[in-house]
Image (cartoon, rainbow, N blue to C red; front, side):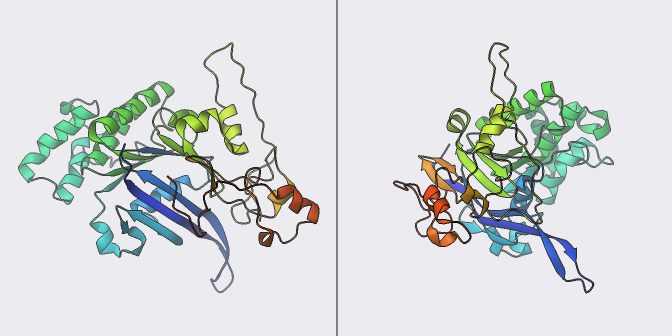
Length: 361
């Protein structure tokens, strides 16, 4: 893994219109992604984890150009993708590829899998026409499929085999970044392990960079170098894999880790049961997004949203248990709550959007 930053996401936001009035003017919005910032180094696998509806797949779709950000910047190899027009963005379509969640719906049932894999090569003129077939055979063998299967149709394959075809299609244009949008969630557990091992091997062999999106921390543990945890459109914690799994700071991350079953029957993990429901993304709470389900909440959590700070080297967390809240941000909090929220800030890096912010390292 290189220290070079391949992808730099800065204050990314995406809102969808939820309702309109009689004249068609929007009256409410769904805050799918709210001020998310992170970086991915070249050759790194960055895992993005969270519950359904937290905005992780929306981020992936914005990276590949399927959705347009409401605000924020996506900088890829020093170029701002959000400032490009459609023609400029099209020149980079081969650099960022997507592996879809559903390995059947993402494949054209009227085309053979060989033509599906060959199509991006021909469309982008990656190779001369007489070399395309050899390249398709090579890709099939690389993902664990026999080359003679290229004349079959998607319905003739199992779910795991179809996902291998999807991986081969993503590799066909020699991408620099692959967005894996829950690539194993629709597969059986035994097949999930095979596909995860395949992705890990391809990363080492080809020097690929991944944004790996998943529901559970148990899945990204075997693939990712660093992990980011999202909740209701916000990034709650970002850390290296070892630090996140052994010393989680955010209460939400602690709850997710406690839900992972232990393979050792003698080891009993204390389960953290979260009470309450996930708030509506149309009307999120004014303070911390996790406040109504958090077992460690304080009064200040209800009125002031925590910033993402580097609490430990390379370990970022958005939680008032570690972050002091500036007095000017507290509007409706009593003097007692202000004293309770005041905590030392020695050695911290500035939060995103403030002077001195250098991005997530």
